[in-house]
Length: 175
Picture (tube, rainbow, N blue to C red):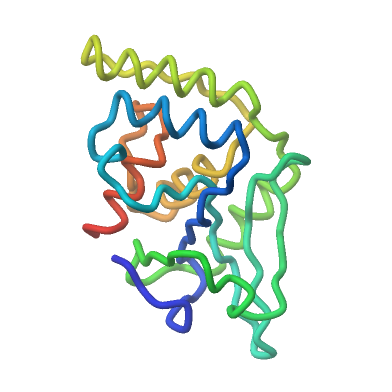
């Protein structure tokens, strides 16, 4: 379910607006070919993160997969994330379990090849109705959110399918 930035707490996810980075534009365009729901969306976020903590001082600690790998990224306040869309997927979470998962996944390598495997998996899923997914230790941002939610007890995308932002955002919005 979509929430406001001020409602955000540990366990919630956020979707950053798509930049004009040529790679993001091309990959989002390719996704639009195979996914009509994505094609119809006005806003097409591309990067995602998971909120790990909201500190009393207002700082927000997130986990994101960025070019240098999976890391904790801290923002001075929730206002620094004002352009993001926020989603609550889990009504209640075990914060100790969330922190343990995050600590275990910190510093994993960024999954550059994951976009290729995801694209091939999506083509297989749409054309052959058979999901294809490569599983490795590397992660990209959508995988961070999807795997954390699966570990915390409620998957937002079936484990056997390639992780697609279009399917994740649809699931997060319909709750």
